[in-house]
Length: 153
Image (cartoon, rainbow, N blue to C red; front, side, top):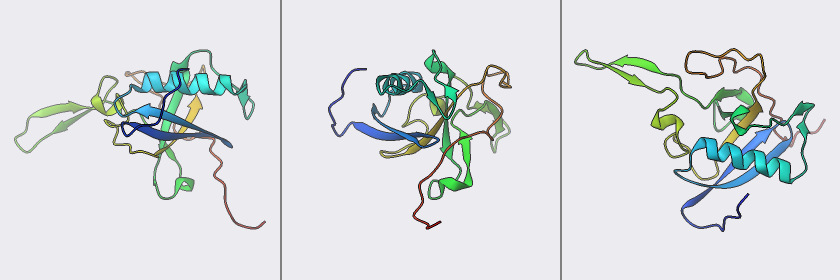
């Protein structure tokens, strides 16, 4: 994994699964496939072979990214980052397709509306995961993210 020196064009994104948090410097327009490869490299470099009894994938494309439903309260849950293709109709009645695998919304952090310091969850795609026609995971309920709290037990 190449070392990146911090500069104003690089963002720090936080990636979380279970109790593991990885900070990565990424370019604003860097592709998510490249970011996933950097994330997998960072995990392997730190010696991880599994997280919470789930083995690291051999291919970075088997990593699924997610965003908090409420960015101010991640405990409310997570939703997949990939936006499926949808057909929308504007005021004039013409139809337009948005989202999908090749959409700018799914291409980079800036396209997805992320900011410097954004928090993302990650999980490993299971072999038997249900997928739709765009090859996107349909199951968003199994995000394993443990957020630290200051509450006394």
